[in-house]
Image (tube, rainbow over all chains, first blue to last red; front, side, top):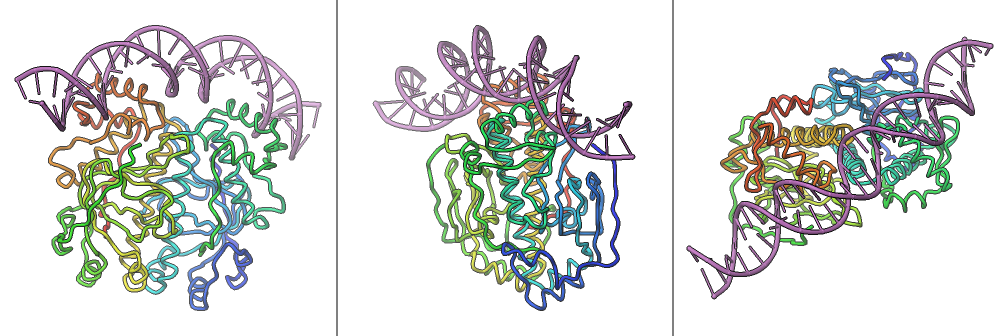
Length: 253
Length: 253
DNA sequence: CGCTTACTTGACATTGGTCAATTATGGTGG
DNA sequence: CCACCATAATTGACCAATGTCAAGTAAGCG
């Protein structure tokens, strides 16, 4: 509920050739032409502070981003202040694709930690579709994957009870974090508050707290100093009755 | 919860040149080359009965579909039988894109009414990306739109109460139905049972019934003979605190 | 030290769930 | 046309999960 909107454009940025995401086995690699295009597609880097809003629902952004480091989240709000967190954004994730395609952002994005993003020119997107079938395919794949994650969340919020939902969410975030660990920070902690958990799961903070306390007392997670660490993936998986999808090669741009 | 899996392939089908979807202003139209490709892309038509399952979670389908007429829905289930309906499928909607791209279906699809679908060859999808940037763009757009709808549903299930959720859902379906009215059936009724509403909103059938009764008593909807009709769009819109998106031109394949 | 933000906890209120019985409604075979 | 059956919708009584309120405590920071 912070109103802070903040961000600065770095003038000197990491060249795509040395993109930090390349190191990760989970990402597919580009061929020369693709890399060449992506280099031209990228027009800068954007740094935003923890708590700042990167994109706002209803805005028309000229940009598209890929997160290089840090954590963020997508959310929507109702007029009276109720907030629903839709999904989290981790390194390698694209930000603003929906808004770029449909003209207007249908959700907002906020930084959970300091974030560094690649900035792409919306204008060049048509060139991407015209000349790079493989990248076009990747974009569609990325959108389909987001859909698939939202399906899971909806299943969770609609059908699972508080304990199951919490177990699902933390396991989900933990798995995602592990896949890009070094880019997130040196440790494996999940940088969210209980308010974020509550707003993601559709629960009140109070009930969220009581539920998380149960997970702690069963030694499935730790929650210390505003950070959450997962201690027992299997335990969470059993409670949630959910197994994370097998990590196949995934694209990024 | 029916186990029926049923479908027959029609041998003689509507040629794309006379695609019934063309008549609708909401759909963008193809140029000659695109139409030519889509004709080759389409390999048949599939008819399925009410209640039959078209695609099953976990399956690897060789096909991709576009719904020509009828209603269906996408859903996921938990082991113990709890079911979450994720979204509804109306004429012009694509079925199975996520599964085609990611290899395995992450949800199932069931027919609410008899459905007629175009069948496309998954194999030819790479040709689509290679040679038809405009259609590739359309596919990405379609995926982004589905994401955007899921965002709305998640907001609803996570934050709105029973009455608000019901109002939102019925208004949502009503608007979608109106946009393709003639292909759905001659009337504007929504062909779902209260069990479907319950499984979409994450409520029990009993509570759903009590909630719908309120909407009926306020003259916002009618619910007769297993069919729902919306009587007061504005009334529903006010309760849900939601306005349907403005209908812009949308693609189909 | 005094803020501010996050987290905790208990008491109580309410929404929505469960159970169980009853009433439509539509389709079927005789 | 009727008896019968299955599915869907209704309703009331009672219960449980989760929300709200209020009053703490803990930790981080200028």
